[in-house]
Structure formats: structure tokens, C-alpha cells
Length: 260
Ligand code: 13P
Image 1 (spheres, rainbow, N blue to C red):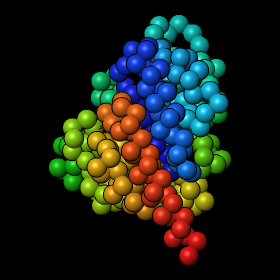
Image 2: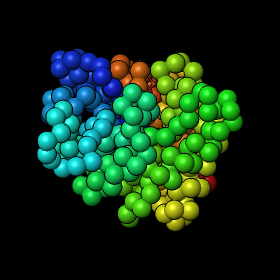
Image 3: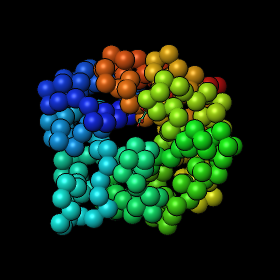
């Protein structure tokens, strides 16, 4: 189980460091749950210093597909790597929507991240019109196919997929556990078809979209939900901590059931 916080374009340098310290405290009792936080790029270094030697790992929210050059304002995977990042979110719906990122571009970034040993968290998800039109499975299948096309994936740990229905992001509206499970099962089937059953079975598929303490346990209890990508509720460490605890309880329940 993985619980990841996407801090988006929030915090300043001091509140960011304070939040990171809080997440470290909240993660002391995380059990087997892995925790990662993705601060704004300008604070990666400061947050990295707080996380150093702790069990919380560092992630970024985006990267350029190329290593260096005249791309004013951009940040490369090499730079993220040099700051100690383990994860990088790619193709978040806000990047797709506001910055016109395409699946082809996300695919180039994912390939580069894999080469560098950065674990991409590739985001997919339909918007409200697409769901209303009954096209959610078609849309997500398309995104998975083209964002992951020709990836050289050797292990299930090298990639994470996050299902984030756009209509549930920052709206307070959440997919029901059944809706999330349905989509996660489809994504897992597609990953199995592309990368084989071992990788497909073990790959982490996160749910994102208004996950909070009140709904985390139900969502995380679904069979194909392996964690959460959390926006708003990751900006307060105690609230984020409650989600980590919900994940821990679900994970321990699964292990106990598996041992029976
Ligand atoms: P919220 O949790 O604020 O809905 O955001 C989800 C998200 O976009 C995480 O990447």
C-alpha cells in the first residue's frame, strides 16, 4: 500500500518544511504502508533534507522528457534524481487540462523516468462529460495504452498508475468504492495484457480524487486499490496521518486474511 501526497502549487518554504516534518511524525506508525510526498519543485531540496533518513520518500509533480537544454522554466528528471526524488507524478489531469499535455508526451516522460530509475506515477482518468456519456472505460483504456506504449518495464515496482477521475478532484465528490474498483480492475487487466500477469498482479494502482479520512478505508479496502494519491487532504499532516492509518489497518487486515 502506498499513500502519496500531491501538494500541488501550495505552501511556502516554511510551511512546506513544517508539513514535511508533520508527515514524518505521522508516518512513524505506518506499518508496512509506504508514504511519499510531492512538494512544489522549488521546495524539493528543503523537504528532501527533512525526509533524509526517514521512511517518507520524496516525489515531484512533473518533469520534462529531455535531460537538459534551452527549455526555460522546465525541470529534468536528472535534476529530480540529483535531489533524491524517488517518484514523479506524470500526466496529472491538471497538466493535461491546463498545459495541454498529451499521452504521447506523458509516454516520452515515462520512458525517460524509467531510464533514470525514477518511479513514474502515471495519472489517468475521465472527466464528467465522458462519464456521463458512458465513455469512462474507453477513455481510460486509451490513456493507459498510449501513455504506457512500449515502456520497458522490468518490475512491478518501477511504475505506479493513479486513477483520478477528473470530476472527483478537488470537488469533494468521490468515486464510490465500487466505481473505483471497477476502473482499477480494468486498468490491471490492461497492464497484465501489456506487461504480463506477474507485473499486472503486483503493480500499484492508486485512487485519487477527494480521498479523505472519512472515505479512505472504504476505498482502500477494494481489492485492486493499492493506495491513494491525495491532494487537499495531504496539506494537513494530521489529516494525512489519518489516511495513512486507514491504509495501515486495511493492509494489516489483508495480510491477516492472507495468512489464514
Ligand atoms: P484532491 O484530493 O484534492 O481531490 O486531489 C486529488 C489529486 O489530484 C491528487 O493528485
